[in-house]
Image (tube, rainbow, N blue to C red; front, side, top):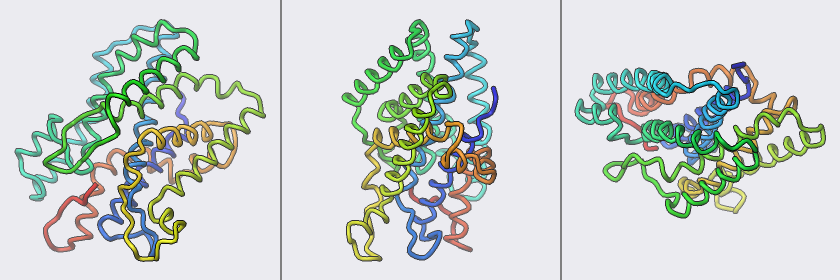
Length: 310
């Protein structure tokens, strides 16, 4: 597949949001008064949308070309993408005394995933739903029919599984169900992606405008900025989990940004194609795994290392 530069850039943006949020949580703001608390979870939601967009698109592309899908090969590729770096990270944490060997092994086999590691089993469990998606969507040739089925699935799942989740011990349990509607938004984008480049200039302008407005909304939903707009005195702590349960809104906003970035031109594509952001996106998984350890070093600086709260 031709590599889409804006997707790498958006992946870089996602990990940058997580980094900035966790740094602020640890008392390391990017600049005085610039608090990024609360941006980590929306950044993870962007990861989920991008992951489902790419994987669903690849698999449905094979179906449309009548190419067989080797699910064993798919599973092996996904596990090789996730497990080795994860195992190495856990090994480093054990060696440094941050984590005991028992909990580390539970993390590795996806029975436990605390702090920012909670995303790992969620992502892997989503991979298990992809054969079902292909089975359901494959026979449908109409994009509207496919998107309609995905919308019905997302709504049904949300009615059963409320957007509620904790990544803190001892209450954490690996569970993809509350996040599946977010993934399904990315899958719906994958269904419509082949038609993005075939739209008229007027439609492209509308899509870029929608992406811009969504980007503005995402900025406004930063808790510190929202608090400033509400007249909260500077220095007053803002509840950074205020918007964490707005799973579906963030999924739709990121979807609009993604569509805007995939247009042939425009500022969203230019920003998402910025070389440093693309480079960060290409190493985003390793950065995501190891960033808490680096933050712990700077926070404790000579004391016991630790993982900042998600």
